[in-house]
Image (cartoon, rainbow, N blue to C red):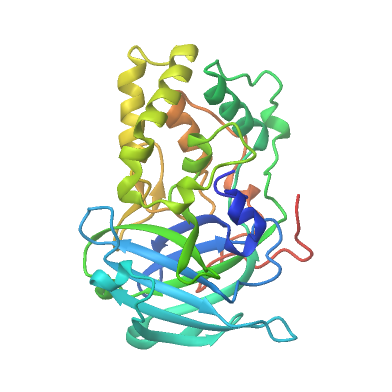
Length: 341
């Protein structure tokens, strides 16, 4: 769900599995969040991995800025050294480029960097809100090209599939002037060093549920999506998404022209990037998608967009595992003993 337990490669080490990303205005700039290690938040971060925040500043679905976070081996108390590097231009797309160090410190503590950049990493309550019954019904309908069957769903008894669970989070706040554009696109990736040298991209994430919708049969989702790049999305996945949405909308009879609607969905979701206009309120909603705030009911938005009809998950923002904090690092405090639900 969303990207929780996304690809086979990510599931082999949940520290590499990006469950969700967010971008919204903070107290001193734009906030980027990457959550990994869903359902527990234990075990910290992989010491041989790159956790990269990708920023497109010119609308070509290719990164112009990369903020790269790396971690050291865990100390006996579980803390890890953390380092943030900034890479610009061609170096932003080169995993062998060194970039420049802009923040250093330890997990669990705020790291103040150069130019007003702030970094924090550690366990937090998962802010994602979804009802598994509803999402499962939508995925079944997509896979089979049949109407969505919600006959067994009781909204009054709905529960959040990730309530009471934690994630490992990385929170980055960047002054708007560093980003170099008013309108940006954002996605997150993890990559792992290989024994043969180089890097293998393991997970990528931007808008919620896109990977799930493209591969609705599950639970074994292929690795190809996570290993690919946003600028490839339309060519690689546009036809598949159009066909899936056309069939299910035709079966549910929610659009007079199912193909035209499916193409609108394709153009709304691909390339898979979170668009955001700096300094504005984040809203992942029905009428606009501008960034993504913590605790938003984004699965309802995505399901309703795909099916061209309102789909409720029966959940409010209070169904999240915890309430966001007003100050940096903004994410809700971890749930004591939080684990798989």
